Amino acid sequence: MNWKTGAIALGLAALGCMAQAQTSFPERPVTMIVPVPPGGILDTVARMVTPSMTQTLGQPVVIDNRAGAGGNIAASAVARAAPDGYTLLVGYSMFHVGNPSMYANLTWDPLRDFAPVGMLVVSPHVVAVNPATPFKTLRELVDYARANPGKLNYATSGTGSVPHVGMELFKQQNHIDIVHVPYKGAAPALQDVIAGNVQMTVATPPSLMGFVQAGKVRALAVAAKNRLPQMPDVPTTAEAGFPGFELEAWVALFAPRGTPPAVVERLTAAARTALASPQVKKSAETAGVEIRYMAPAELDAVVRHDVQYWSKVIKTANIRAE
Image 1 (tube, rainbow, N blue to C red):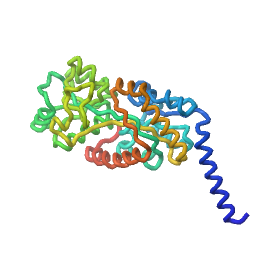
Image 2: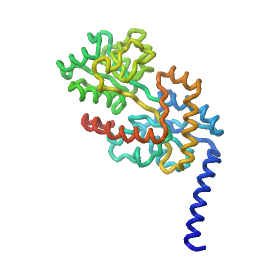
Image 3: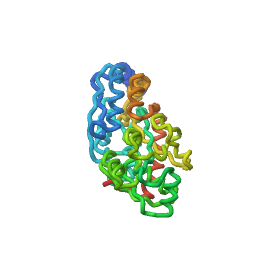
Image 4: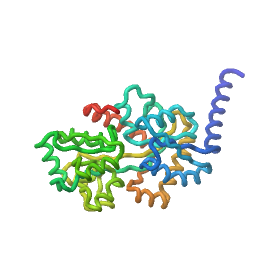
């Protein structure tokens, strides 16, 4: 066999492997690694889509919760996994695009180590205050903060979280000084806002809705393009006079870089089918998240944009992971 014949044979073999991957994948269970404990929004979204994906793929899609280190344990595990489609990461926006700017010596890279599979959902954030404060609008809060630097506090679910980084962006945009008070989760943060120990918070609708309806917190604005069906009387940040501030967390699926395109296509098709199902749509509405499927190329563009965008905010605010 001469070198030309050998090259042709290798090319045909590669095509054969791709075709085989497309027709036979998966041949065993697929694992979704979730970077948080059971019960959080990432875990909820993963469990929303796995029944349908299991049916579409013809193999179990199982959840593996690997919490810790701000999502880095899970991300490192998937980055090092075999690029065969059997190990996926349920990625959270600020873990995925913010950690490279907040952690020194990170062992993974969002662009180098992962193949986008598809965007699943997004969750907007709401700016809310203790009802005993005098602020009825976001403009009133900003005017007070500008006149009284450092006198207001805001609670978040933790250092480096979407609410933390997002609020630092809002402070930069409006030249105000509000002191960050980090908690270990949204629940304790909200409890201190309700108790009046902290004046305000930024959180997702599922965390806030019940307290808003009970009058225990006052929602000032939704940091999104549209009002929320669950809070129809709460204006968007643009309607409140701050059109440059939108804050959404996203949840997406990633495979290890090098996963065959045919396998990625099988996975993204299964995710797309799941998101279109009535049961998942109902679950998303109940969870207070918005289904927003994106194909791999679209998701890749979002990741590349967000890495650059949030890096500037994080570096300006000098945010470092604890």
